[in-house]
Length: 158
Image 1: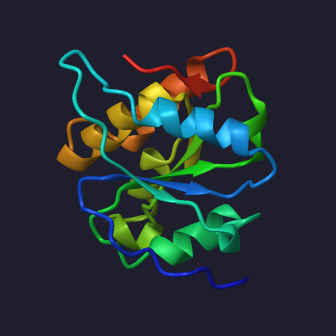
Image 2: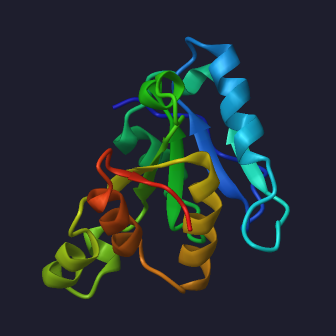
């Protein structure tokens, strides 16, 4: 497994989006523009830390998780991968940073990852997921469940 560059300069409240596909700059521009739009009922300002470094091209989920592991305030990371760039919805891959070590026991971990450790979300849903996980209002498993119930397996936002 390769070692990715360290993530620096991220404010603890910023969404973290790692670009892992570099084939379509125009698609990336669409994704970043969507992520920077105000969000929620009150039209909150979007705060996003983008990793846009070709060293991350083709990075796997595990490589990304290893690179961001030192950030203890991060509950979820979003990957702009090949699927993100090619899909009309530009759904990003949301990945929990939770590990078995973070849980009380195996049963707790299994419950929290009932639908897996990742799911897809449209750009508008990224901020819902990140902010609610940060404040402990909702859990990763709830969002993963909503994505699981969607015909395309995508969380669509509130």
